[in-house]
Structures are given as structure tokens and as C-alpha cells.
Image (cartoon, rainbow, N blue to C red; front, top):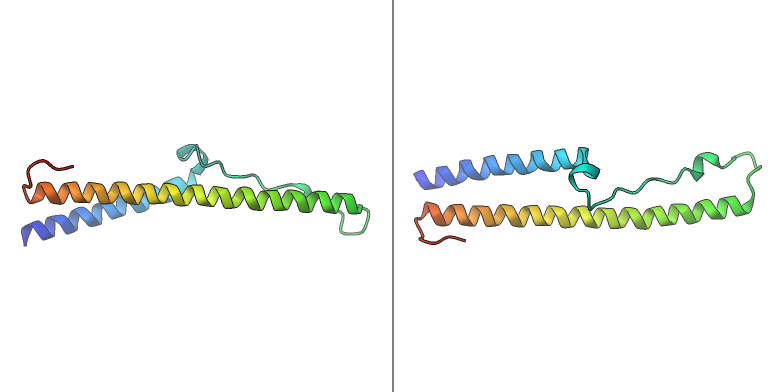
Length: 109
């Protein structure tokens, strides 16, 4: 029972650490995940005139910027998902190694 309790406590502590890490990286994504570059929303929407003084070219140009932003945002989300998958894999490897050592399994990887 002692091994299970120790594993459970380790699991809960590690889980809490991963949650805190994910919260931290979401708050500081550009710094913590420098390879996942958060896209900047286009500012063209603020420059469009709703009262009709903007021409069709401006609307089309802005639409293009918004579509590009959507593609960049999808890439950014994919990058974050990959990072989360990497963190989960790292956590699982750590738990496997811990469990091996808890069972005194000899050489543990």
C-alpha cells in the first residue's frame, strides 16, 4: 500500500506542476515557448470606415489579412498542442522511471 500511496502523491504533485506550467506558459507564451510565435491580429479592421468611405480594395485587402491571421493562428495552436504533447510524454516517461525505481527494477530508463 505504501508504494501506491507514494505513487499517487507523486502523480498528484506532478500533475499540479504540469497544470501550473501550462498556466504559466499560456500567460507568457512568447517568452516560455519562443518557437511558438503568437500571431498579431491585423489592425486593418480598426481602419475600415463603416460609413462607406473605405473602398472595395481596402475591404478586400483587410479580408486577406484576416485570412492570413487565421492561418497563422491555426499554426500557433498546432505548435502549442505539440508542446503540450511533448510535456505529457515527458511526464509519462518520468512516471515510468519512478515506478521502475519504486519496484527496485534495476536499470531504469
